[in-house]
Amino acid sequence: MIFRECAGGIIFHEDKVFLLQNEKGEWVFPKGVIRQGKSSTAVALERAKKEAGIDASILSAVGETSYEFYSITRNAPVCNRIVWFLMTAETADFTIEKEDGKVLDGGFFNIIEAFDKVTYSQDKSLLNIAYRKLKEL
Image (tube, rainbow, N blue to C red; front, side, top):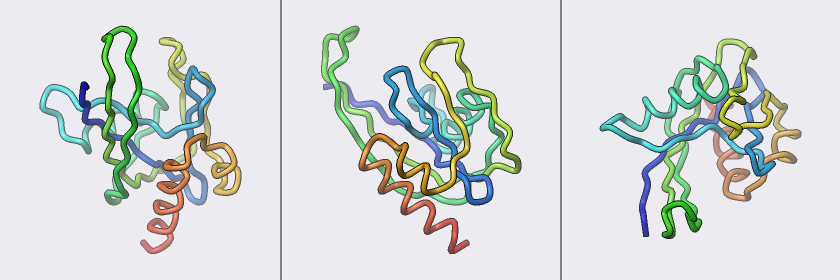
């Protein structure tokens, strides 16, 4: 099995959270693989900028998730382990990176809409934790 370390962000602007719709139609948070000795915080900030055009700030770590899939191109199972950060954006401005075909849509959604849209249960749990932490700060 191939293990990949990843990082991502749950980005809030006021009471709205940012979600991306990937090429499979799943609603997820921006994330990416940690490469070339970069830190998890650097990767999380870079993915927010690259995938959504958002200049975000990190408030705190919020949790970790992992998932497995079979990579046809690598002909091997892959396990992605993701560290997540609670992030904020100064504005609700965003620009979806659609050129590579990996992102179909995205936007800021109020918390109720976001819970309805988020595809995976572990992401729903992360959103719940991040939202509670945001309210405490």
